Length: 576
Image (cartoon, rainbow, N blue to C red; front, side, top):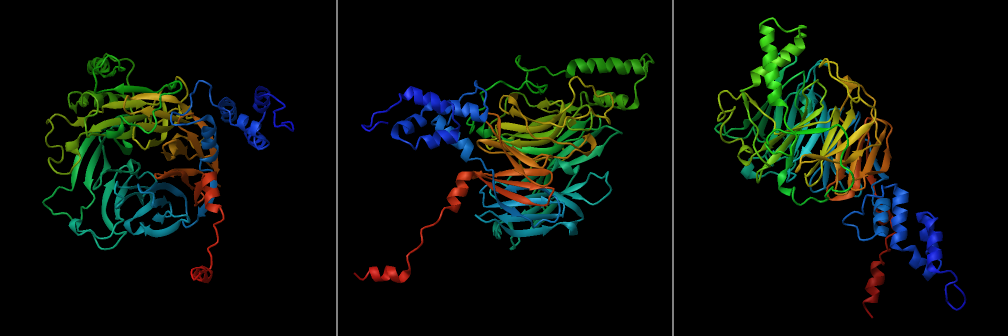
């Protein structure tokens, strides 16, 4: 400005100059004078800065909750938990999983050192309790989950045994003081009950505050089996012998060496009021297919089952009559016989959309090979959410040996992680894709998998894939050594571990990677505080847990506090 206070340059020219600057330079220039400050806060200027700096596709609109482009830029720049504030080294081996309590006051960690540790989440994190599971014949602890009121912790582990063993166990640990009406032991962190779990990578999950889901596996042939999912009372050791403490939920047929794994439960009650509606951007363009097996609507992709059944019957009739050429391998013959026997002996799926008060049971499965390449979804109705009532399959038809799935999502790749959004509306899936057009000829030899991990997103209300796949993280282990990499979802962000020694954070709305979080080895698990998404924990094979906070939170926590006045100075001032 000149000496009289009039601007020497018009706003339009200052605006054009500011367009060529970076965000930090724009803010610095805005301190020069009032005119530049006004231009530096221009909405069109910050829209350009936003799209250019974060490399967001221009067809993606601003976040629906954003009040301005400047504030939205500041949110993605300043509110992402990317500053390491604490490293926990109490574990002595690989840390495999982390889980937060719903209140955010505590979290649990599971490790290959065979301990489940419970931590106090304060400004400085401290260890509250360490449960050694070796006396229970555990090889290591792999997973944990708090129940809804944070009074109980489900911990899942793997039994000692040969490398080929798949047996595990679920333990329930008390987190609350004694509650006489439940006859809990007086000690906090008491072990309340233990439940067998096979295969161990079913992990287990809570269905209600006092009941949990476990799995069992029964072999039928070399590559055929059935998975039974059980509902267990958490207080099995203290209930009356006249009260059911376990009930069978579902019995599912497995073909081609596949099994049910990684169970989780989604609550349907919040589907109509999601925290963030993912309706922006192009839908997923990958090879994922969703089969709605419980609907007869014309807009759903048809289930190929009926036509397949007719062809299967003709094939087996030809085999019996010696007309099948060339002869089928034993594995394919076993699978086709199992499919035929299951016809007419499977309870059909529930019709229509999720009923009021129902929940969705979600798990990984498959139909072509042992590597998990499909997601099975089964509705749990309110009357099924208790161990009371019929047990061991009573109440179903005598011929209904198996339960059919309501939906199947085929991702055409190896699933290595799943997580639900806080509102349970969206399912995020880590998958390593198979080569395009690959065919599984042998169920024991799945196709090779990509090093790049695709993070897919599915809407559980519409049963459709949404958004483009998120990419940045990588994994290197082959099919037969592939392990689970846990991810987590907050209101605005999604985070995942990776085998490239980093954790990653993406924005859910803009589909962009915002941060890479460094470890010294594979990052197995990440978890946001459910009460404060600007706090993230990461767990790694380097035996550490790291806490990360956003830059703005760190500034607040490190800001100098005003020094309190000495007591006697205050006391003297009161005399006057």
